[in-house]
Image (cartoon, rainbow over all chains, first blue to last red; front, side, top):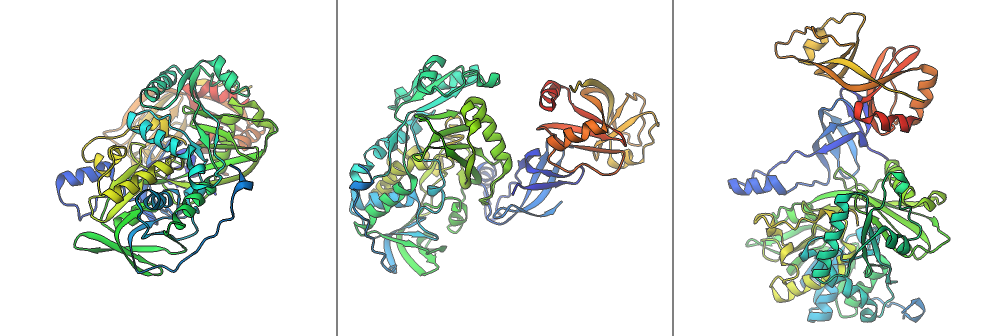
Length: 80
Length: 402
Length: 127
């Protein structure tokens, strides 16, 4: 099943109309400033489960939206 | 070698022990090859491979089985050429028929800049031990008569590179050849045992928590595909990995022979013929990270469009099967192998879309690392520490698809 | 054969509430392309909205063509993977034949709009 994303301005559209954007979250356990920079630049949480993420509606309003999606099933849990 | 010369496989499936010298998490190609080389080359047989499903259930059974070494940077060319050589001799070494077939791989270029890339690829490959030559459209037509050099007047073929040593092999057979080779030397392979955690003591990894109880180990190797971030986080190790789905499909039988593996790095599309005569077609990863094995109509549509435009005969074929694997993508499109900064815990990951071809060399080098404690020169450039020290192994143009 | 013509318009970027409360003359088409952005055609250089930081600029970056409803519907049914709005008139935007398109749907006709650089591609794909 193809992923559908609900754009708050344009309505539900197929995922191919959007660009994926990640919200980098550096764990609090990393305290050193350089280590935090390294983590933000390269490391990924890559969760197996719900993740809050950003999508850009390239084919429509050209605005970012926030989405919560389960990466195991691609189920969209709530649109922000 | 062929299937009639093979002996029947006799496996013993022992009960898990409470401790091993080495525990390898993930019974795919890389995990089993590491176990195989540990046993065969270093005599280390007190080894367990833990697989939560059945061996080869993950990406080892979902890839498009291409073996090649025509990468774009010296470090990668040397590593994949080693793998290509090991694959060539794997049947003789393991006494198993893995259906290894040398086919040659054709990269076609549709733009001037892609043409420069292919020329550079041929130069870098030649300089570092792989065989790749720059080819003109006329030669491309000779290598692959089915190609439409005009690219449907949209993507004209201006030239390309030809890598004659590229091959394919049956992926399940490769996995089982390594499994059998390891097991008959005393390695334990445990299917349906899930690793749920890592045990730590004094800042080092000392074993694994599994669905069959705790198992102690002097060294734990993370060789899982798709779930490596979760595994590494149990040891507090952060990885630069994002897991993306990758889809592929096969058509029904094509009546003629299609000898070569044809690829367009620009269109992110490639295709080869399976031993059954089906055309196997793959493309780039899905853009969003996901662990889902879902398939999309969008992929079929786009991929078929590219296939038909370059190879008009594809028009008369029908799609039989479509499937998905998950790819652990690293930021520089190169693998991550070796030490993690946590004693007793090693990883072989970041196998993105280029894992199958790397199985023998990846296993061989990881085994050498485990046996000696020293990172072998061949994989030293691919360490996890390269991100902190700004030594990226950037090779997107070679690794984008297969 | 579809033939798209350049659309001359005014683009306004302002706060959503300022755009919500703005009054537009009856002889203009107003497309709300985002919560904080509107496209007005024919152009309206003196457009006033209640946002002191509003950006009002001339825009000729789009091209469009009117189609009678009985021609437009079969085309869109073929080229559109998402559901068209039911109310009339309605504005909608999304992928049409793989190109970022905007639709202004009236009772008996539809205005198809694409960014000007995509005109040739769009005409070819809809042919």
